[in-house]
Amino acid sequence: MARISLWLPPFSPDYSGAAAVLFDLKTVTAMHDGSGCTGNYTGYDEPRWYGSASGIFCSGLREIDAVLGDDEKLIRKMIRAAEDIRPDILALIGSPVPMVIGADLAGIARELEERTGIVSMGFNTTGTAYYDKGAYMAAAELLRRFAPAGERRPGRVNILGALPMDFYKGRETALLKAFLEDAGYEVGLTLAMDYTLEQLRRAGTAQVNVAVSRFGLLTARYMEREYGIPYLCGFPAGEQAQQGWLAALERTAREQVSRIWEDADSAGSARAEAGPSILIVGEQVMAASMRTGFRREMGFSRVAVGCLYGAEKCLMESGDVNLPTERDIKAAVNSGAYDLVIADPFLKCLLERENVGFLPFAQYAVSSKLGTGAQASVFGVNFNRWFQSKKEELGI
Image (cartoon, rainbow, N blue to C red; front, side, top):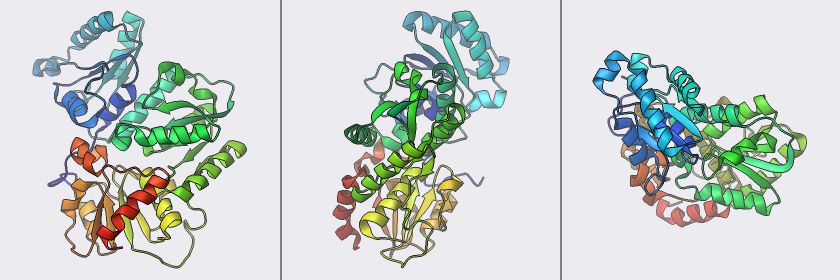
């Protein structure tokens, strides 16, 4: 009951994250449901869907199928689709009903691969976890099946964690890719937007990985274990921060030691309090990167992160909070500890204190297409321009 929301919509679930990772590849991807979850993904969680040729399908699960557990019917449908599309991959993605009836999609995928000869994957997603967990499940399986370890190529970087739930249509990650290339790096893979199967096959040859979201951090840890590739976790939000982030990347590549991008001069250290007290609510890696931008660009020291989709201990600072429920979010923004809340526009309805400013920063995982009017670029100097344009309105 604690997870019930009265004001907020459900955030993007794990099955949407798994489907988003497969979106760019030539797949037959079937969500095993009665069309509701498929429609939720294509209509609300995937801005790339309209006008695309991505092979996302619904299994058409019906009550009698759930009762009888007719796996053969699902397998026959997948085989017919494969005969028409001739994909590189067949994928089955779970939803709440298969979870309840105990469907083994990974097992069905193994049988499907034996009968078709096509690489097949089954993900037992449930709809009860957030998108980053499903995305990680899909990314780890893709890497396991397609990306062997190889000779590491100096200067090659993988960008990990690019999903529409965090980066909408990918403008921010495109800016990051161009910035890296201008700095002399080769971007081998951008997982999971605008990439190919061939790029995926070369993923194990990168010198360093860049994790730009929690999904990216989970994937970077996997690749560190399997390939020995170190990672830098964080996003360059702010003009000065951009150069500091690049220096951290160069150090990571040189020393081959993973690190979290942060303002090393101020994070976790005592310093005079400056500026308004700010709470940034959202995806933890981006929110923490924006905190570093506020410190370096604005001189604001009192900045806390509120984590919507789960919290990684390595990114937490004193004062940061995990916000797993609507009740927790409402309590945090109305605690009286903050002068300014930065969050998706849908969260504004939870703010009841008149003396607290609210700066909308859209997150597709929360407000989907309804929040796109509050989209903002925070890459490099764009962060400075965005916040400066809002300062007078906020009275800061």
